Length: 474
Ligand SMILES: [Zn+2]
Image 1 (cartoon, rainbow, N blue to C red):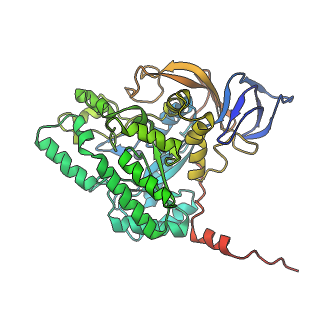
Image 2: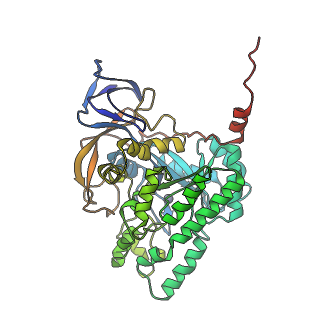
Image 3: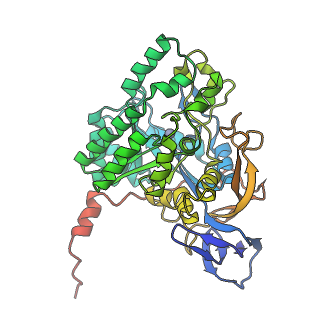
């Protein structure tokens, strides 16, 4: 199968160029102006962009949470992702508490194998960091599961203490893995949350009010200092507040390998969305949506590269039947919002159309930076030899976001009725056209598990770099 994308403008993180793109099998094989070659299918991209498929490094398909499960399966969730221009996800496998990483990983392979419509990788959620698991970390890195998410939040469920976090950070300096952190002071948050419920605040707004921004800032700084002491890089997931961003900025100014993502919900929604009686349950996620003022700081962070990329934390629960479990006590509302389908278009609309970021920076945030951060050297760029994960993107097409038209398996949209400019017309996943002009042409099982590469921070890598060049023999 040879497909020729004709007449478009390639937008990569480093440049924009008018050129045609030839795909053969699963790869991009030729790029050039006005290519005169035979192809089985010619895709007209005149006045459109040709961009690398989006990479969402933060999703939770079928995540168990508070007695229920995030609704999207690997099939429905990855199909929705593809409609939104995303051709790779990295989902979070979960170590069962008291169990091993292997058990969590096996369970997630089971969920995804033969069902995913686009390529996928896994991170590992650490539920309890016991010493004997440090060795198992090395095995996972070797198998291409190169990052481990630890929490300073959710006491009794996911929370790791400082010693456990420190030891895990130390281990990554040896095995090339990366620690991802959910940084909020969960112990303090739980204290405030029960005070709120005791004083009669049980609506979803209580969720937003109890999780102070300073609790995120404090935990972020604490983990940065632990990482510095361990000599390890660290990555903060779903950074939501100025308080946390200021700590990341300070660390980066010190030259520390500290990285962070934010998510569309923190750039487009605010604490006010949590305030409309129980309707606010639709917007309950952790960290919570923040008061006005934090958003502008996060945009500044994206412009200045203090925030390196955009993930969604896609974790959809129906309003009816699932979010409703928390009527009368906001602490029982399943945490999470849908978003895997809307990420690329929201970032184009809120970033490029408003003039905050360039088209290349947009591509970097939604595709190139995640590929580099998470060890996917064949993804994240439209270039010869790369996987043919390519989107023909119309930067001018306007459309309305709505639960009545989205493809995610969830009964509401956080962005109901919002018009966005920019849409994916043709989506190609490793050479297969999966979406064309709104029609689904893909299939479950097309997506392959991606063994990711460790980052270059390991002792072995450092030793290699420091060693003198080998003397030629003879
Ligand atoms: Zn998450």
